[in-house]
Length: 141
Image 1: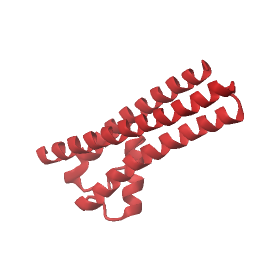
Image 2 (image 1 turned 135 degrees about the vertical axis):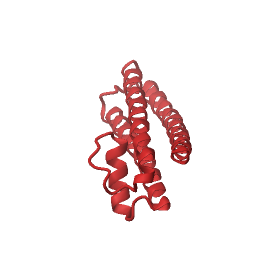
Image 3 (image 1 turned 90 degrees about the vertical axis):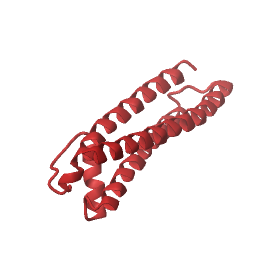
Image 4 (image 1 turned 45 degrees about the vertical axis):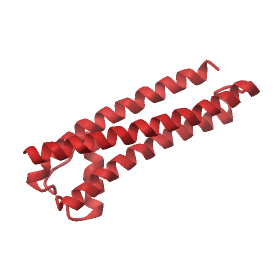
């Protein structure tokens, strides 16, 4: 159990760092876009504003994808799940806290996947807060 908790702690740390760095990079890119919109007096509901919003949503989705794949590769490396497709599927439903079945997961690593579910919900919440804040800032321009 200690081994699982240590590994889960490492994965939470890695995903928080990946997510934080990704959000910082997105914020910087969007700050540049906001300056362009403000200087040209473009409305956030314009085509350019909508493109920025689409870019933000797709980027957040990709960021979560990276974190899901990190867990999937971990499960493969541990031998907890045998196939890449199954590992990515299992990681995706676990990260999103949808859950389905942990029958494909090796029993001695199930605690890691349970913590992935908690981690995923926190990362999704963080992204939601970032998205709402960013949309609010764009509306003030």
